[in-house]
Length: 288
Image (cartoon, rainbow, N blue to C red; front, side, top):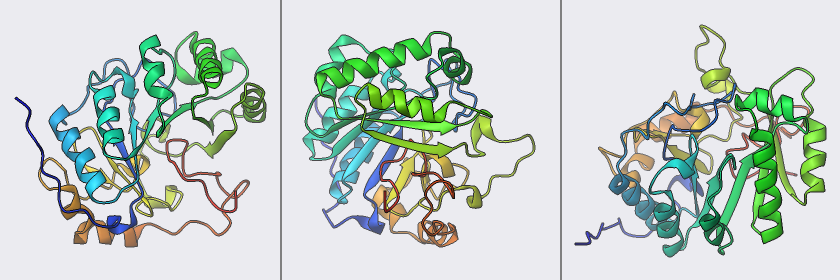
């Protein structure tokens, strides 16, 4: 039996949200040193059920949100990730899958090449040892690089993010290598003090964010919490398992959070800040 989830009445983008990050799992094959969610092979998919995620996707479309991003952890380890992507596409959403590209099942390429789908990944260095040291997984450089080349060959809409983590990290060389493989959309970011990148005793602060949390974007975490983005996970404003997305985005707690986020630094592109809030996010700053 199929249960129909009734979405709220369609309106223009509520609270100006254009992109909704769906952190569907904490599981990942890698243990990146800077991981914002501290994901690992031992992590769980969280408290959100497949039905909960379907409801959020339907609500997002009804609220006029244009893009949903499946992220983790590694979203492709969630058993229902393709179902979520297909549902979003059927509702007219753009769907971005943010994958480490450590493993790609050959059957997934048909989805990645569909109109409306964007594939995103992280890349750290043109030096295999340095890349693998950051990801915590030997061989991750070779496998990610191989799947990037395959994606480009197949004409997949692809973008890559580079996070500057280690002193002297080969960031410029990583960008050059990506460009040589045919990747044209490349963002860079400095490491943020969130998750495993936070120093011992560090107290989370919104000042560490780029200023774009709540401004055009929002995130749902694996436990159902609504946050300004996946990086501002320590400042939730309610839970979609208890309250519908429309009520949360239209509520006082969301408005208060939006007022608390420091605005983006003027002309905050390198070297003042990153050319995007994080490679996990979708829009880049102006004028780039």
